[in-house]
Every structure is written in structure tokens, then in C-alpha cells.
Length: 369
Ligand SMILES: Cc1ncc(COP(=O)(O)O)c(C=O)c1O
Image (tube, rainbow, N blue to C red; front, side, top):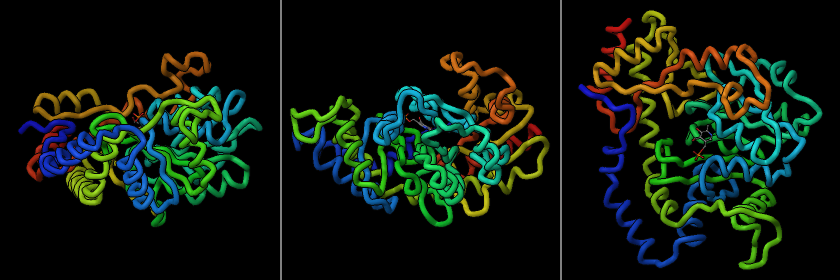
């Protein structure tokens, strides 16, 4: 049985009529930018997160960048980011002229380790202005400890919530803890648009106003520009489609968690295979189900030979990327991130996957080990 790494077919088949209706509504409205659809989605997303404000933006990277700009972070500043994140987290700091400073994650959770404040302290300097915790793969970082640590030091917190829509730390959703929080609605995310899209959420009206202005040419009033802004807006079509899909997010999250449960019960204690661990206090919404093994290449080939998709998130940590040669890092600087990059592999996990498909994956993996 073939199992693709990711398929939208079943997710979208169930809501196709609603998606088509939303598209038609936008076409018929004759209004495509900064209109009612964006407002309605922003309200719905703010409600979902239980925050005061949400501002639709063009994508996740732009959301992170505008958050940093709204907080006044720029040249000469340093921004702490995990050493094992997707490149966008670090790029946002670079784009505003700041320097990304990497902090090692916990090997078992792949997240910033708030039991290891020494790691944060050794990365912190008098130039540190912000930290971007990443709820990588869908698990919430310990935001209580992180907020306390950062607030006590006057450091801004911007959550990167691209991968964790609906996850919680101690009952409070990711994307509602930080001073500003960015997310991506890239199609493959738990809540995905049918193109590029993102949002910033915050409880601070000044931050929300600043981002609204910055995303729209630095303008509050049409053709009057207060600052040198950008065009980084969410459009009406994606907002309308996202609102249809948001209604299904709780159900899709449950499906992901159920698949993860099957993987856990079928794959524990077999060979050299480490399963993802969820910390006490956190929930995991399994944007990815990421396992670790020293036999990764052989396992991926074994799965591919049986028509089963798998991917590596991510093969090269940011500090070793060609684009960051100028930061002067070398192999060995962040050994945990480097080991993760060598050993992680993500298994198929998507709403609509059948029990038989999940079983085909676990059977093939058990066979391998
Ligand atoms: C952790 C993380 N941060 C940021 C981004 C950037 O989002 P986008 O692709 O919408 O720019 C992504 C996904 O692409 C991501 O996974």
C-alpha cells in the first residue's frame, strides 16, 4: 500500500463545496485586499487563540520580521533562536539587521529547554533584545518559565507558532503567550491556506497597530505614510479559505493525535528508534511525527521501496547553512542540533489517513528493525 508523506485530497474533498463557495464570494465581492474577509478571519483567529488582536500577514517569515520591527529590534541587536529550527526563524532576525544567536534544544523534545536556563544565560549578552521560541513539530515550549525568564531581563518574546496551531502549555494556547506571536498558514501547516499566508497575534494594541501599519506601506490612512512600511498583507481570498478550514482544525488536530498514538503504541521499544517525547504541561498537535534513528538513510530507503513517504525536518541546522557562513560557526558548535539533523526523520501524519495506511507505515518500520 502506497502512503504519501502528505496528501490534502481527503481533507479538501470533505470541504470542497465550502471552499468553492468562499472563493465565489470573494470574486463576487469585487474586493480583494484589506476587506471584510481578512477582518473576519483575524477575529476568528484571535478568538481561537484567546488573544485581543490578530493581524493577517503575507506569510510566517514576514510575520516574524514585522513582529521584530514592531518591537523596535534592528541593527546591533541580538535575537536568541533555537539551533535546530527551520531557517525562517533565524532569517527574520537577519532581515531586520539583527544577529541570530543560537541556543541548543533538549534532545528528547527538540525544544528550547527551560530546565537548562544556563544555556539561555550563556547565549545572552547586553545586546540581547528578543527571543523566538519555536513550538517545533507541534509541541508547546514551556512558556511559563520562558516568559518569566525573559520578562525579568527586559527581553521581548516572539513565539514562532508556525507548527503548533492549537497546542497548549498548561492549558493556554501557543501564540497567546509572547509579546507578539507569528504564525504561518503555509499549505502544509496544521491550518494551511491554499497559498502563502500568516498572522501575528498579540494582546498589546500598540504592537497590533504597528504591524497593521507596517504590513500596509506604513500607512494608517490611504495615501498617507507615517513610516517606511512594506507590502506584507494577507489577501481576501486566502482569508476566506482559511476561515472555512479553521472550523475543521479541532477535528484535524484530534486525527493527528490519534495517528501519533498509534505510532507510539506500535513503535515503542523497537531497535534504535527514538519516538518524540511530550513534556509534562505541554500538548502536542503533531504537525510532524519526528523519530530519530542512527539508521536513517537505510530506513528511509526501506520505506520508499514500499511506497511510503518520509522527509527530514531538517537536514542542515541554520548555523551550518551556506547563507550563514558569515556568522563564523563550525561543525561542533551546536552538537545537539547537529545530531538531530543527522538522525531525525518524519513519518506521514495527516488528517484523512486511514488506519490501514498508518498500519502499513508501522508494519514497514517494524520489519526494518
Ligand atoms: C518554524 C517555522 N517558522 C517559520 C516558518 C515560515 O513560514 P512561511 O513559510 O509562511 O514564511 C515556517 C514554515 O515555513 C516554520 O516551519
